[in-house]
Length: 102
Figure 1: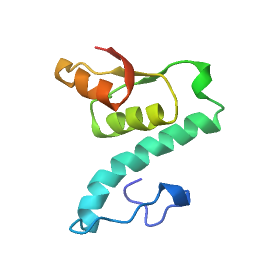
Figure 2: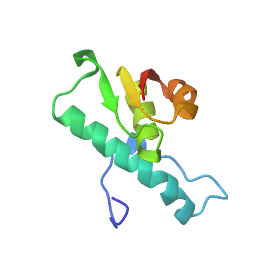
Figure 3: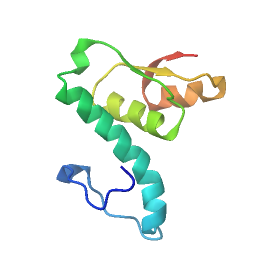
């Protein structure tokens, strides 16, 4: 989580920090991404695979949820995003959600 001093991750998850982005700003963005990826890893460690069916992401319009939608879509999952904010539905579709539930 965000309070960890060290974390072990796969090398291909790492990217160089862009110039002009300090560590604090990177962590603001990175914490949501790290949390979302831990959730994806937990699903896959439990044997869940894209061919098993849809994955539902609640709170999909938030930081962790929207990152999870994008990650899962990129990995080949059919993502059902749950968001009560209709104004975010097109955004969630652009991230890869195949369906949106309110």
